[in-house]
Length: 358
Image (cartoon, rainbow, N blue to C red; front, side, top):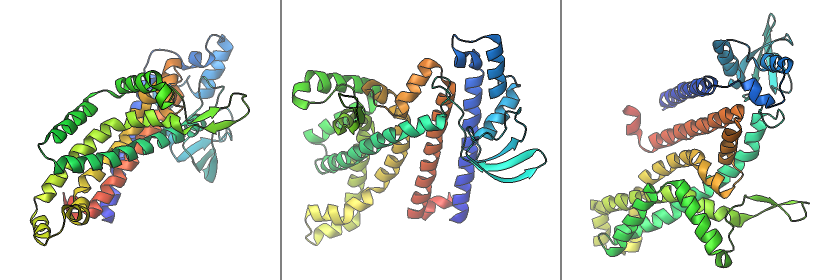
């Protein structure tokens, strides 16, 4: 088991290294001068030179790549010279020095995701820390709704196999998996937030935290969570319904289920005591993967509902060409995706040791 975990973590690091490399190359081979993006229309020759020197934009692309790896790595190397990009500035690095080799300090630190081009030099890590919790809340609520409703509908769909109810659920599931999230978001916002606003009291847009009418305080508006959570949960809901239905039908055909029925147990007790637990394994595995995907899938949903999460921040940063925020956000989402998938693999291998032998 330990060797299996080590191998998964190792491959996770390799994947993350590939993601970092792709992110850097993708956003550094694009046309445009990052220094000009930072200064917008206020630049002059001296300012451009200072910005390029400060952020290492005057170096060859391979050197910039090494700088980026050094920034995002928890273990990094830093020059003692203030003229060098890697100088250990307190504003840039919240670091703990380990030891020195000549003019180089070796430190351990939080990954440095650089500074925003458009937010007055604000650290990208601060931008992500302000928006990621809202995305996490949205994803947790969406996946919880999908799990609860999907399991219930999947059970009833299996019990009423090949009936009109089963066919209706199948059609709904197919629509849920095929309709794009951004289209569902627009439809739900218009219908429930505008057409039926008088009855639902829901708004077309809104975030979790809102400022009162006098601008004196911030309060939580939970009702703004309803529509984006439902929209974000539609696709995993459809998957859970079909997985639960098929898994329960397979379980109900097993010999021990027939034995339980022969003993006189009611159908409710058979499902609750024997069938349900054994039917949940594929559902739990799928939903764990979906949770990681939802962090990335929330981009358009958050933007349409004006939900102040990481997804909306990514779209805004794309509109303003705020490259460090885009790069940092994509890297954080990719890291979370890798971590969650490693944990799922480890838990599943613990439940089914045969996986470790494959």
